[in-house]
Length: 149
Image (cartoon, rainbow, N blue to C red; front, side, top):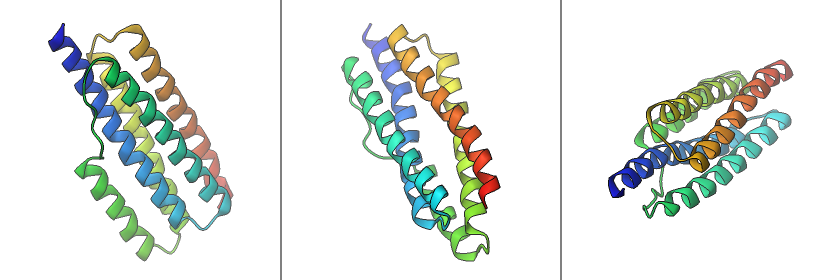
């Protein structure tokens, strides 16, 4: 049972790490965006990912596991790339939207991978499905925001 708890805890920590990255990325996008609707959208997504992190931390703790408290090196590199793009891009909002779409698609894939490869308890599976579905809805919204520019 302990090994199972560790496996589930590790998988949830992987998702948690990605949510740290997403939250930081959305905050950076909000700072860089010029369009007020995009700025607001990115701020709301950052807050949502903060909520996801809280939910995941509670779930991880329920397995008696410790949770990670930072993002990944890949996420740091991605945010640095966003900074470079914002400095040299003549159409900054387009760049931020492209990066947000890319990041959200990667998030959906990450959730799907964890949901597919691990036998999860029903409460954990429901939490991950709920979060993944919100991210998928956000992808639709991001695509509609492309028309605002």
